[in-house]
Image (cartoon, rainbow, N blue to C red):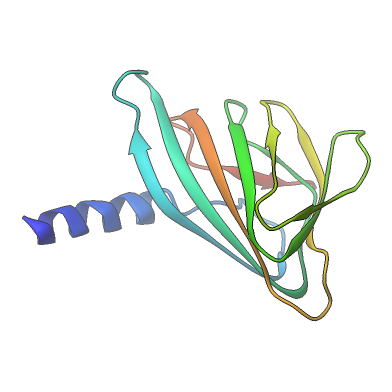
Length: 137
């Protein structure tokens, strides 16, 4: 039974792994850590994405799947973030922000040049959406 569950989770992670359609993160690792269909909301899934930044790490400016509602929580270090025309914010460990469908994430980076940082981004998204993040062209 445990092997079946492990295999199912592994397949879900592989199927949901195209987080970026292109573009080059700098000193950053992006991993889909869970993918669950929402049984009470047909056609929707909840996906967890772990973003790990090394010192000075960043991701290119981007948008997300058109259906994506995101809650991002800093789980280690400090994160520099700017969404739409808002000001650049620095979020500390334990702080969070949201992104709604259509938001443009202009800055996503480690606020430190010497320490690691991590974000857990939880997406509520249409199950059919496989590209969660699309870098600007």
